Structure formats: structure tokens, C-alpha cells
Image (tube, rainbow over all chains, first blue to last red; front, side, top):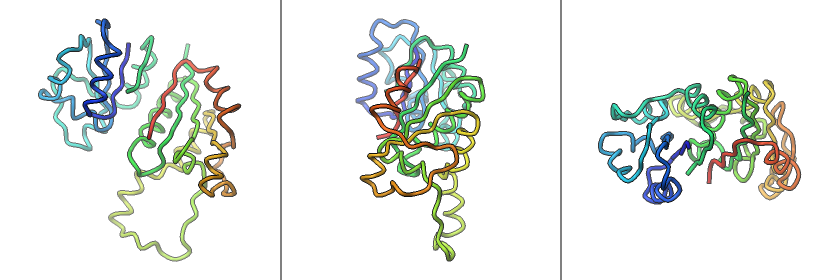
Length: 93
Length: 132
């Protein structure tokens, strides 16, 4: 399942933890301010999540001058659209 | 086979970047062969209207204008509609905001929650509610 976060707030992370419980093939796409979670330090906030892949919106990352962790793949809008097409289910938090 | 993706866009221009994100993602989805619906609700309905520029020069500085132009979505929304996206407003939120009589961008249609939005939902594979 694809989970999309657009805010780095604790409530979004709590919602993600709740709805993704048991999902061992979670894809997480970080957009807007949530790209701040794509750093090495930020990924520690997902410690309880069994995420298969992390992605981040490239323009949001570049605008904010965020240095992504090597575990996070930056995507342009075409890449995000492709990810949406590939996902069987999508939840935006 | 492409998906039908519906955006319920609740934010207008500049209050955050949600509208820019939604329109850019909608454009990418449409360009890849998916079907896109955009329902403009709440402050999002302000994106439906043609701009009404000042007759004289705006006091906004050139530097600030260049920054703000990144949030102006008129051309992108008309382009989306021109490529086949359904872009529909909620007429009651327009009424309450006093914008009901303003001219729409090319391709934008008047609508409502009970009929227009519901029809979108019934035919959608994906619904994004974006904005606040």
C-alpha cells in the first residue's frame, strides 16, 4: 500500500502507524513539508513502520534544501504519478 | 489501464502549496493517460475564476511578484481542462464567498457536492482530499 504524507507532524505519523499496522510492503511518499522526514534523522521517526520503500517529492526537497537519506528516492511528478498507478491502494495522511 | 483519480481540492492559491502540488500531480497523471477529476471546494473554489487584475500597476514588487507567480495556477488549470480533466466547483461555497458571479477559467464548470462530486466519487479509483 502507498502512504502519502504531506506534513511532518506527530499526528500524521501516529495515523500512519495505526493504518499501516501489519503492512510489510508499505511504500511511503513524502511531499511538501513531510520531505523533512526524508533525512537520515527524520527516518528514525518511522522506526515502527515496516516500510519497503521511501520516496520524496523532488521539488519540495529542492525548495527546502533538504538532503535526503540514501534510503529515500526523489521523484518528479511523472515518477509520483507512476507510483500512484502501481499502488494497489493509496492512503493520504 | 489508467486510473481515474479525483482530487477534492480544499485549499486555494498561496495559503499553502497544496493547490500547486495537486495541479502538478494531476497534470502528470493526465499526461500518463489517467483520467483526472478536480473538485474545487472551500477556498479551492477561488481557483475557478479568471483573474481580475488592477487597472493600474500592482504595488507588489517585481521580486515578490516573481515569487508569487509560482502560485498562480490559471494557465495550468485551463491546460488541465483542455486536456480532458473535469474541473468542477462547488457553487454553494462560491455563493458564500461572494464569487458566484465571477467568470470561470476556460473549461471550469459549476457543480455541487450532491450531484457533481458524488458522480466523480462513484467513478473513481483514487480520491485525494488535499488542503484544509
